[in-house]
Amino acid sequence: MVKNSKSLLISLTILFFITMVTSKSPNFSQNLSLQALGLNKQEKLSHLRFYFHDIVSGPNPTAIWAAQTPTSKKSPTLFGSIAMFDDPLTVGPERSSKLVGRAQGIYGSASQSEDALLMTMNLAFVEGKFNGSSLSVFGRNAVVKAVREMPIVGGSGVFRFARGYVQARTLKFNATSGDALVEYDVFVFHY
Image (cartoon, rainbow, N blue to C red):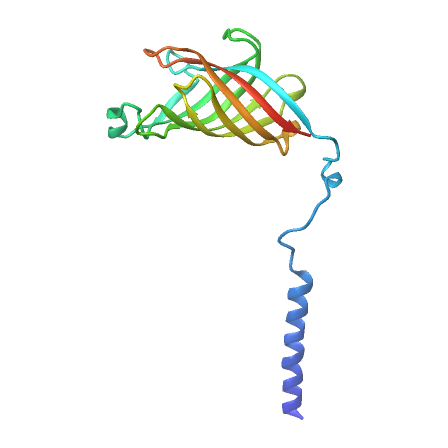
């Protein structure tokens, strides 16, 4: 009888743990409907144009070198140098024109043979119907090319589930100060 009770107790314990593990374990993933996320609207394609003011000189720079190695300073491309930026985005090319957002992120010199940056940034909007929304951009920016293209990898707010690309064109670059004015054309799919 003791042997049977012991076997029964072990069997019930195993059954209990199997039941607990299988019935209460959370799912790692689940399928969701677009309607449940409020995404049952038709996807839109928007075009935005604004101007990126990268100011590294003067008393109030919007971009600063955060890291450089001794070899970075000797490199013709500044390979390995990393900058943080919080650059104004304006509706026109003049620095005094209306602020529509800020480009906030990091760029680093990622090539030993050409002037090419790895850029990761959020375009955080502060104006109009995009106020409070942002786009996330991550890509290569070969700054000496006339037109560069960088992918949009996501967004927030109005731009939740965004995808698209940014075209960048340098309008002005001061080789002495390092300051730059860049026109951005943004083509973005969003809900």
